[in-house]
Image 1 (cartoon, one colour):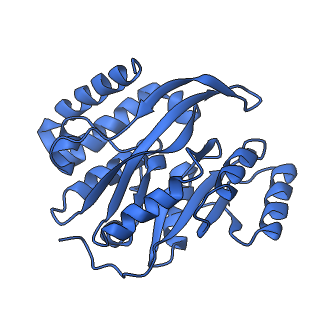
Image 2: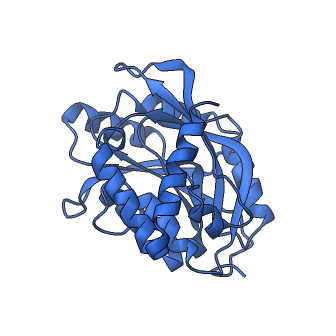
Length: 267
């Protein structure tokens, strides 16, 4: 049984993209969306106080295509997860939410079509998990031809045991359905780098959660940013998230998470 009953109407996807002076990266994201075979997506850019050139790009983009919209970030909603929480609040009841960064883009022209087909085939689904590919970006935004690593949720029978054994879904490749949002409508305060992990862990506590996985390389992810630099803070937050979800067993998923991360670099 899922967290809530879902409408049989076609799903809608709202993509939330926090931005900050990243207009030079956005054309690749925008182009990958416009090339989709399924075109009924919407994008909300939440801008954290960018300079005039970036704001002008957003204004022009949104004026030319009604599927794009932008709003300034609420100054009381601090950091990237504050912006993402603003996205949670902006969603319509039937929306499936997806969170990308400015340096992410669709993995193929049929990625959204395949995701929507999977959702439509299982109207009780609360989370849709797919895969992503991390790629290195140069300072000018060019993509390295060699992948850094692949990311996927390693399935070990069911969702919560998979989390306990160190697997975690990347938010860029996870669609969050209406039922999940009714259960947990925002990322927890206090996390700067691992609020997404904490969100998926907290959802797993409810036995009604219905999770569906598909073997789809849904997104290409630019490898970098603040979460790739503040290693000590990230380790502290990951440990905190696991302790909130698993208590004294926190050390098991903590250790196995990084074993899996190391093995993914070999693929």
